[in-house]
Image (cartoon, rainbow, N blue to C red; front, side):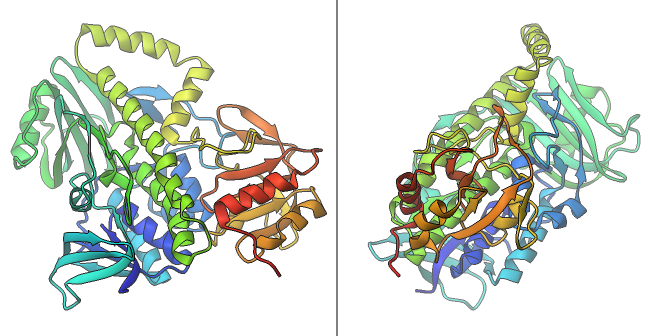
Length: 500
């Protein structure tokens, strides 16, 4: 084998997945068709759950230093409020994708990830023992790589998805949007939120001093996806909508997108898997694309590593599709809804007014913000505890080694069995998994833990936390620990117990 896992694509999803695999000791090669990072700004922010998973790995400070927190969010341009009780990171981080890719690549290199650039995937052949990835490579490396698994993180037009024969059904585009990073010397305001007009809408957002991101959306016309996009087209679109180009000049990056929404019908075909835009595309309302890709990677990474290492059953890898496909479906639904709410016209204006009046209610606002921030995600779980399947709150704790909060326990990317007062029963039940699961004894500093959607739950006596930060099993305060249920959860996720 040339590598245990090959990843196609060195965007945020592919790089995050590579880091997750390396934390688990897996040998990874990332192949990327571009000769160097494009430097294109692309996505513009990270939401709460993405900030949490970076915090879980101990690298969040790097990203906070490169961006700016903004206490503002929206659903199709209608403002959302945030609740600081729901997460340590309730506000979006405004950070360009170019910076995200740079920071993730630096981390990947620290971990020993091999990255081959100017390598285009041209063929995929899998069998019972592995997968062969054929490459059109500009470097002196081999023209084919043999690996145990291949993960396509190569974007909406994924070559890996096509070569693997995975379907990509969905809905066609109904509009055309353009985006560009430009100078706007005649803009009367530093920040222009969405301005609705008869033919669509436009906005201008100041990301850096002297530079603005201009976005125009025009409906009932769909440009050919292979049609070149030019500065003059963006200028003309802004003039049609705003009546002026605000002195637009010096474009750094220009692109086009639409509201087509598609999702792979399966995220795994044998030894080939998909993540990020290769698995789902949608209207970029609320900036959910990059975030969902990073969260795909964190869900997949530890599962794939466990199967590669032989410490977990093959069934664990099957849960990747089972857990992440419904999340993708929900994002496609909410972005379709946001696209519909953005359409011009008197009927939509009336709908927006009614929808906006509902958003003043706390329950409605909470539902929408947790949907966009991915704090409402709950995976299927056999345990009936209200925390089971949800992401674990970053609660304040006091452990013997000085750890003061839950997420500090997850820096190594290993599962954690946190004993908060259950006693010897937990340690005895988990004895056969001591080589794979870290047992930590601590006490909770809070009587209740915040959980979005259901407000809060009493601090548990014990909780089994997967490497991605989701709860596999928990025992409530004062309950007798169900040792059989704990062993069942340990075996299901982390393989059979080992004797001695």
